[in-house]
Length: 294
Ligand SMILES: C[S@@+](CC[C@H](N)C(=O)[O-])C[C@H]1O[C@@H](n2cnc3c(N)ncnc32)[C@H](O)[C@@H]1O
Image 1 (cartoon, rainbow, N blue to C red):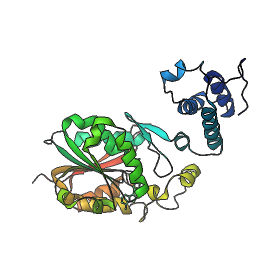
Image 2 (image 1 turned 45 degrees about the vertical axis):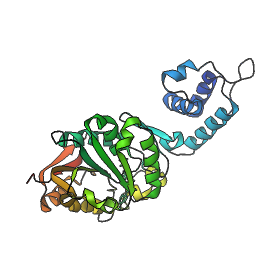
Image 3 (image 1 turned 30 degrees about the horizontal axis):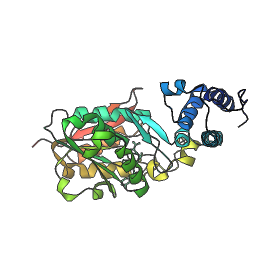
Image 4 (image 1 turned 90 degrees about the vertical axis):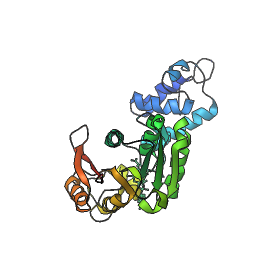
């Protein structure tokens, strides 16, 4: 970094923020996120440390983050963390970057089982960083529940475990297990789940709409699925009747064009109350269904 020093030869966070802003082409919010992470002071706390001097180690960390960002890495991986609903989670290249549109699946999922007796048994299949299941655990822990987070990737499971440790009291309700879809779950949950929620990989390999930055940096295991992107969705749907309790709900995130095929697959396996739900922009984004109550 090439900052202008303060009079006493040290660098305050005010100076570093200005210099970082210049290096990231004037994008002050991005500069601030990077400076907050380097300083360890978030939000209003950062404003309190503006006149404090950064240590050499902090400046080196800041420099390294700016270099990575300018080299094209997604900001979320550069920072090593990102916000999802009320959580601030660890994210790195072992897991998908949590997307804002996924936040809504938590509301739909909880609404779908709101009238079921507690404690709820919940499975978040393909949990990645853990954001969906951990949000349910953190926000609904007072309701009484047990949340199983699964992933076939041991790397992702490590990230989910680390993030579970960060949610406080709700973590007591969380179990993280490795394995492919339902194979990861213990047999005693079979036919007892109140909720199956999943944001599985659903992009067709070779889809030209995938941005280069996504294809280059995010794990392909988290993005792509066989059978025109529908392969994993079909696996989740086909096991749902067996793993859900009577009256339990399944909800999956989908690609924009997958509403009809996934809804049809759900009807074919005997699920009821099948609904395609839109995101805030009005695009079909989730499919929800229930196992018949009797
Ligand atoms: C689209 S990412 C979703 C991650 C996280 N739930 C989210 O919404 O940010 C899909 C996740 O499914 C996992 N996955 C891929 N194949 C799987 C399989 N056969 N069984 C279980 N998980 C799988 C990936 O490792 C990845 O973490």
